[in-house]
Length: 173
Image (cartoon, rainbow, N blue to C red; front, side):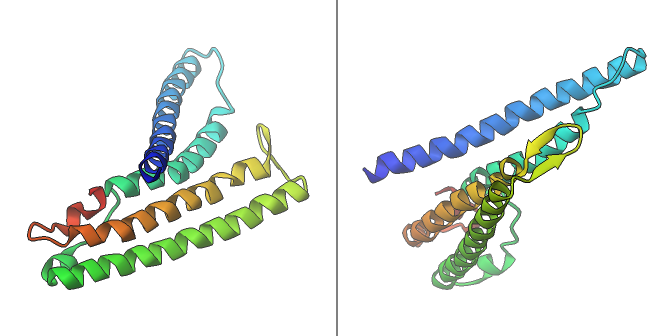
């Protein structure tokens, strides 16, 4: 059961990452089209900037848990590599616990913002009109996925205490 839940979680992370990659590819193609049609004075895609803003914002939030899972986030491990293994593992757990706290704050305040936007029928009005709750939804969703990943990282670090411990690769274990 736990293995099936873990695999489902991994599939969710992979889905959001793949979706973001596909959206980025489409945006790059559309920017090229926009440049070409402006240069040939055929027209332009005035909504493209807004679409790019929304896609980059949502995609960054939703792909962050996948990046964390791979250990591809920015990290400075000079202190970890200079500590004895036992202390390095505890420091990793402390950092992951702080990350879990930050993720839970994202979930809480993101959910409050989504609920408030839903209840007040807020609409973001630019080139397109979007219900604001829809634009805010990636925050609590990402926070939830990040919280789950931080819990998994905290649990995973116990199995890393061995002679070949490499803190830089710890997140991918």
